[in-house]
Amino acid sequence: MLTVLLSVVPARAQEGFEPAVDGFDFAVNVAFAPDGTMFVADKDIGEIRVVRDGEILEEPFATVASTAPVNEMGLLGVAVHPDFPVEPWVYAYYSDADENRNRLVRFRAQGDVAVGREDLLDLLPTTFGWHNGGDLAFGPDGMLYVSVGEGHDSDRAQDLNDLGGRILRLKLDGSVPQDNPFGPGNPTFAHGIRNSFGLCFDPVTGDLWVTDNGPGGGDEINLVDAGANLGWPTQLGSGGEPEFVDPILTFSDTIIPTGCAVADGDLYFGEGYDGNLHRMPLPGPNERTVGRFEGGITDVAVAPDESLWIVTPTVLYKRAPAGLTTSPAGGGGTATAATPTASPSASVSPAPDEGPSGLTTAAGIVIAGLLLGGLLLMRSRLLRR
Image (cartoon, rainbow, N blue to C red; front, top):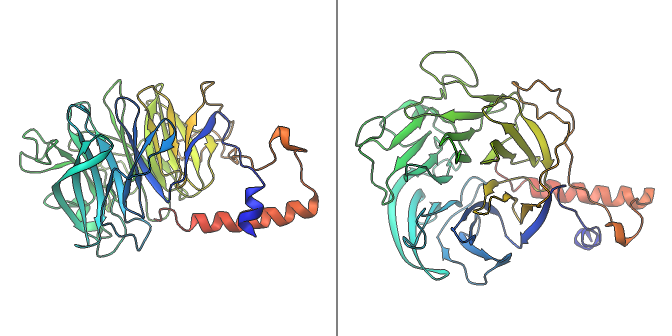
């Protein structure tokens, strides 16, 4: 009954965006080839799906034996070699169902399918399930950056001989660059991180931005330099201690910041639960909530044509050519001057050419209740703290 009622109440995209691709099981990460072809990590089923001209190709590019007994496990990240297709490599980070360990691998592409695989790095065991990290990004230096959570063992984040609670910097074959900040044999670029779902580079300045999730409030947006210690678990948020780098923005409430991207000189980042999209004019810290997407945001990305994309578990949205319309709502960050108010949400109402914009009181109550139940079910599948 819920499915039938939802099907006759069409949902519009957030103003300024349009739904561009749908049909995923649980999309969490997207990467673009130079020609605009998209590679999407479908988390729970362990498939890297290829999207071309708005259509999901029938055959997956590659499938991994991933496991997702909890929401922070599965196929978590995907990235495309910066010289693709001359260097036809697609990278992936996933929770291995056979070995109960997170892995970094890459696949050799031939057309739209993978024809070979290389295992690059064995990461933390998935003993506790949570805090696996998994986002991937190529830096302007041509290196691969990898977010690794502390695996629910917070002491890892301050141990320079560990692999947890940090951002790794690797060569494209998975080896360690000689000029890494903690020595030629250490893959760590920065540490003191609890669990990051998003890292992104400013294409103009080369700055690295990293989202990080607190244990209950204290979610952070960080500008990360080589060798930085972001403080976890000793410090959460801004503390002023000289050995730690304070975040640019801290949220007093739990928002679950996920993916991020820099577009038009602004940093965009999403919320995993409530689906709010934030925009922070750089260098920050003031930010505004500029949209809301049902189902929650799992990633934000910029395509080669500079269009902005929002990833939700089942639908990918693209910013329309007219651009993004902002709202007067503040985002709730502690560094924000504006008073937080309700964010605009994607409307759920009949389209203008399909009848009256309002619903009768009785029908409205019934459908609102069913929608709420559906949204709560969707929310339960999203990334948890």
